[in-house]
Each structure stands twice: as C-alpha cells, then as structure tokens.
Length: 84
Image (cartoon, rainbow, N blue to C red):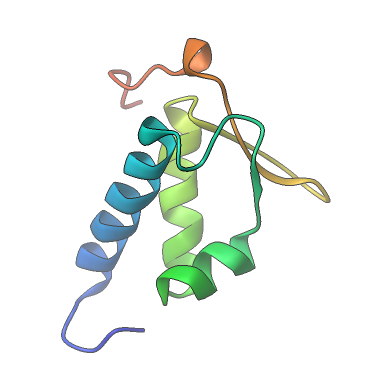
C-alpha cells in the first residue's frame, strides 16, 4: 500500500483510475480483470480493490462472477447516476 495515503484516498484514486479507463475505452467492454490483478496493478490491498469494484458494479460498469472475473460492461448497461 502506498504510504501517506489513507484507505479512503486509495479507494477514491482507484475508483477514478478504473472508471476513467472504462469510460475512455482503455478497458473495453468484454475485457476481464481479476481482483488480484487490479490490486497489484494499482498497488492497493484486495479489500480496497474489492470496494472499488463494488461501486463500479452498482453503476453497471462491471459485472463480477466467481471463476470468471470482473467483466467490463457495455455503456448501454451503465447507470452512473444511481449511487444505491
């Protein structure tokens, strides 16, 4: 974990990075991520990565399935204004 940042900052930074990657097409729909990969790529703990993925999942930007991974969803499924 990066020193000098609290968990909230790490979560926000990861959420921004993943969200930007999805919206820009750098992470295209159908692309599959793993929790371990996200954690390693962004130098955060699995719990921080898991929470960020949950937020993206609640917005319809990703779908998480056991033994498959975290799949980027097409823009038609996104509901970014629903923060429930």
